[in-house]
Image (tube, rainbow, N blue to C red; front, side, top):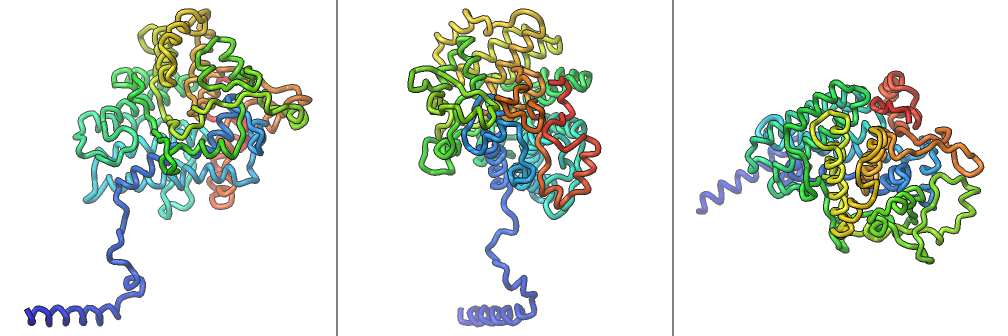
Length: 491
């Protein structure tokens, strides 16, 4: 034993002398530190960060959707103003590319080659990447995609055209579905999947439903390609029930890591319900009126007009108007990437225009029912609404039925306000008329039209101007009223 101790001591001494010849960087490296994070941690982080910052959801999307109005500085978005000289667009852009896309791209790299190669995990990561790229391109149009969020590897990423992005996203989703349909769940993210708990059948449903959404979004600008993809989607499982929703659940907890941060925003910013949204629910006797909108002090549900200019707004008695019900900002409020009601409404639209077989009205009523159930509306109230209210059944011309579907989707997207805005731009419903009376409304920088995209971040002009300029040359002026590729309805 003494012999081995002497040998160990000698080896230690020699190792110490040898270390003097090592570079300083090696001497200062912690031998117990991980060279790279395990892809499980990266995957979980990327999935959670894929549900975008709540502040931007409320500042822009909820007001563009005409669901909320605020009396804070965020009211500038409701006035159709832009923020190019401020850090807001920069924060939104980096929140995607420095946040979830950075992590998920690392997962894609780790799971594609070497000892950590794993086609199942790679397919799951590909789906997460596409959810983020889809929202980014819908917000800005042409964006870095093939070279996007590659870190130090590509410092100055080129911008891809939205048409090419959509084509590649739908192709990759198809490949991911093919992998996951026959995959062994043990090869997935056991214990690291915050959405479906590694249920690969649900990941297939989500991927196919997302592919269906993308195809429907492009059906006006590229009808033949869209129709082909829609047909393929009907041959694969879709999200059909609320237990299959792509939903990040939160808890009634005092720990900020577990609850929805809209709870904190509500404490610091005062949002009221929009007049457009409130009056629509009232006029259609929609049972969600009592779910979403709190009565004012007089017992009346009353919304604020969107887009008032400063003079008109100064005449508003804020306390006369309705607050959102606590369910809309509770700690336990889930965030949704996709829900069953949206899928059924998309099916109703596709059936209405003969893109798929089936009864459009049955699909429409199923979508309505699922959203009402999502908000725990009593079954008797659901039955009464479906039976007695004209808006609960498709009627009239094809365009009127399309209006009904688009309007029900507008309601059903809550609280996924970003997708609500995209669907308004795509369908034109509900109609958001141009503001023309400058004595009452803020016309902003769009001459009173609903904004159609975001301007590129000022940081991109500072750090990647050549590629930004190339994108602008193709897409059109870098303004918030320049439509993205699929926005061709002229609304």
